[in-house]
Length: 103
Image 1 (cartoon, rainbow, N blue to C red):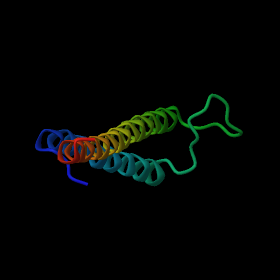
Image 2 (image 1 turned 180 degrees about the vertical axis):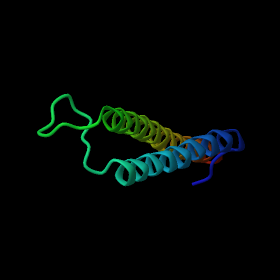
Image 3 (image 1 turned 180 degrees about the horizontal axis):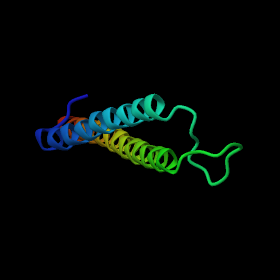
């Protein structure tokens, strides 16, 4: 599978988004687990919880979910670029065979 030079920049950018998104996701989850381990960011809890802890947990969970979705979109872009490059390379091979054998 060979990827044309024009597509390598798009592949690099998508890979960069994937890595940054995964790093932010891991960081947000690690901070949430270490600072507010027993707090669940929902409206009702069994015992009273401090407001700052609920807000921090909600913020960190939102950051983690956004980073996860960015990583999924980047992974989808990487897969789309790979599929397109394989399809184009096979189409180029067919065109070359057609020209060689006058099919």
